[in-house]
Image (cartoon, rainbow, N blue to C red; front, side):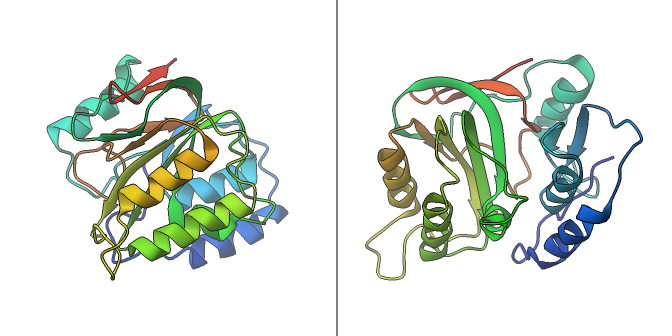
Length: 227
């Protein structure tokens, strides 16, 4: 089952956070498969209830039409056991480097909403993958800085930003671009960074296994999953 928010005007973290708050009352005793596909808010709720014990997929929603690219990645992830990611020729290397770590992250707005709560995921030792939809550059900057100041990025090994769908390429005054904002974060953290990988509210996207071990080679525009 794939549960998700799909393509919407904006990501509203409110409903998911209400469910997360209620999840503290849950006792989930039935065994849950280690690998389970979810999207955005559904994953937030599941991880809050179970802890970071699952490999959960940031993937296309079931109601969406799967493109050949998306279907192939989904099949490699859940059927053949291949690498669901790989080379991202349309991505841009913002900071060089090659590192390994576990994949973590998801929708930026939801992660920012969880900052400072007991449900915020830890990024220590992680390759942090982010995406969003319909956000101005200044809002992306604000959410990234919120997470930075909250210590969320402490110990992270790389920043991989997917698609910021329907986001303006630069700020209202034209002085800062999304590339600038993500580059500043990567330079501050001194970690490799990619921008524009196929993850997010787009038709062609990877079935990204959050929680799995992976390797990022920014110069080669490559994200490889190590099963």
